[in-house]
Length: 176
Ligand SMILES: CC(C)(COP(=O)(O)OP(=O)(O)OC[C@H]1O[C@@H](n2cnc3c(N)ncnc32)[C@H](O)[C@@H]1OP(=O)(O)O)[C@@H](O)C(=O)NCCC(=O)NCCS
Image 1 (cartoon, rainbow, N blue to C red):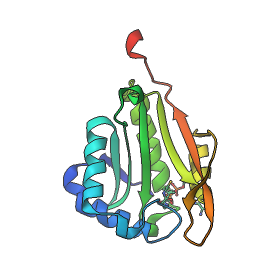
Image 2: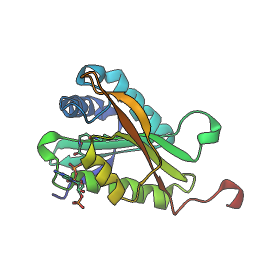
Image 3: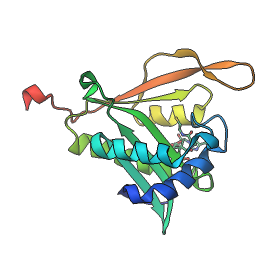
């Protein structure tokens, strides 16, 4: 598939809300459950991504079938980092190249237009093997393990895996 990738706009929040709720119905992927995904949650991540980071959406025809976003954390010591990265592709459209198209566009945008960003970071639960393999293929490196960080909901806990990608287009403000 060859989705149309665009920067998101805050007006798209209802469609993005539907997308995230649907994706969260499959347990063990996103950190939040469907019930924990609200309009406020979506509007807040869109606002933060528009202010300091990036949010892209994938369209198939008129429908939003995927979204990716990340933004800066507040303390200034993190001003070279895009964090809290989340990506979601509509369940009926997974495994068709949409996630790869979205994520590649995201990293290209950071590399070519965001010299202020040195690092893009994310965390994925260890059992989400497909996602971890996908991030490795894009150049993300595993940086350790947060043991027993995820409550699997069945009386067991699993590790959360921190990963990061380094931006070849980074220019330190002092060297600009
Ligand atoms: C993870 C996710 C974003 C990937 O998007 P996608 O559109 O399904 O993925 P793509 O079709 O673009 O495939 C990307 C890569 O994923 C891997 N992949 C895809 N389908 C796979 C499968 N069924 N099994 C194993 N790996 C698979 C491959 O490495 C593929 O790369 P390749 O094309 O070089 O082989 C998407 O499946 C999703 O939204 N999952 C649920 C939410 C989630 O887990 N989000 C991440 C939270 S950290």
